Length: 458
Image (cartoon, rainbow, N blue to C red; front, side):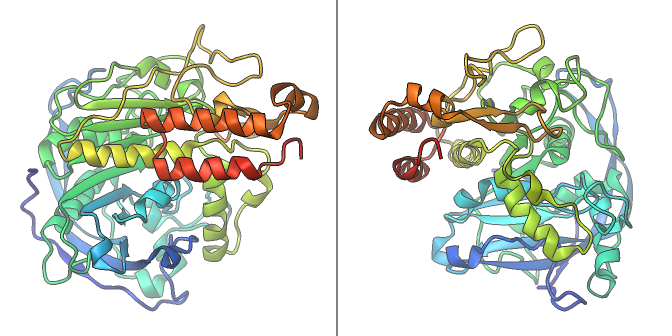
């Protein structure tokens, strides 16, 4: 049983109207086909900022105390099953990513197939940029925060700054467990609330786990996804360069699951050194799991195919991410992410911890690769053990997106003399991944069926 913050907050909504008629960060996925609906709410209250009360070191035992408070009004996006009987009791609260100066729901994309099997999902505009940015995004000049994008809909939002982001996130989680007059979950009663953040939000999630979670005691488990070897500051900025490296504290009483791609090992934070995730590696414990997923990249084709239509619908001037679909990494990150989410759900409910996995093999500040160019070690999937391409998370064409480099016809013919030989090998590798808990049984069945339809060399 977790505790929650005793702060008075108010929730308004569902929010409708505005010049666009739909919320920012509205998903491009057809969640209605999975029996889900999307709503938006405004959340208001007074949030605390935090200051460190000890010298922060690599062990993650980062103590804080509340410093000041400020009023805020932010928004949340809520996706829930339309049939209450489908709800499995777990709410996943995602810290929306603002690396592009707009809110994006990266982990919902990676985990949507598992989420829409019965979870509720809540995306939180925890940081200021998603609300207040006025342009200059690397994604395109037209990419702006909510206040500029639709002032009619979002004119009441008021974010006091990122030093209040951690408490805002906590307060949303607490409100889901103990709603007031307006219930964002529409009457669904959660038995478990998990938190997740990817990339920029993954850095924040590490700092949340180390500094804020022991203080706030809101979430039953946390997913730290695709971070480098450091955390995020308590205030503004993306990366906390000191201490480096930074690890998950080992005295938490709720589980923390780290999901890491090849990109984070050395590339994400500027190359080998103390800020790389390789430097921050630590052993698994009763409350910590780290899965390094071979053949995956920080931002991959599957994620881009979800985010690109979302961006195009929302913004007039946006970079053409579709041009990257065929060249960036198309590895199996989403399948392993779904397995991790279910594993965390069961673990946080008192079940067995997910399986431990070896790290990706590294030597001399580099990933060790097989004769084809694929990584050794790490979480293994059929895409790596029965490959049709090189799947790398390291820069080939663009940073952080990795690459997919298909094998030529001669290589494929040597590896798989017949289509049946390929399907048999792929099925056996999938069964191993399912047995290990790294791919869910229902996703494994889909992959095996797809392998039977795969046209080798075309």
